[in-house]
Length: 219
Image (cartoon, rainbow, N blue to C red; front, side, top):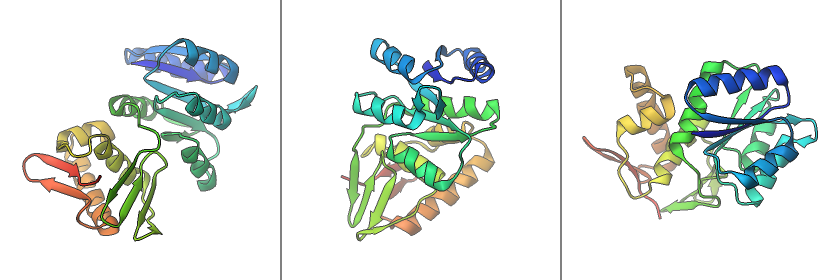
């Protein structure tokens, strides 16, 4: 995959770049928001890794600008600010995932792989199933007009199914994309998440096809 790393701290930038390069990704590393915008205009990337604390501007403003300019690559934000309000701001700015500092390099590598497998999320995508509405890229759900709170992992499953709405997604594909492993523990976690999603949104949103996988019944 082609990864653009935007991080002004030299040691962190070198550490992350080495780790992602070992995973056979083609990594381009820059230190400023200005260089990031220029680089995105010249090249296509599969994943962006963005630090929020940049020397020439806010990383969140950079993410918003890149989305306005048509960049659809998944964005992983690195932030020392783990407050819920800050995370909501990130999601509203078009960020796909975030990782709080200090972070484990293994987790960062797994999140980059997962975002790369998922691919770009069509911005503004809204799906409806009965009285349920899913604003997928904004990670907002309503049922009967009322907001429905969903966890990050619940949204990850819904996003994956939304990208392939109307098609069957195998259990193995979900486990590989979101948990990075088809283990028994991951499978049990998926079962719990699907049960919670159905309880919150109703049984008619995610349909199980026994022996095949799952599909999102939405329009």
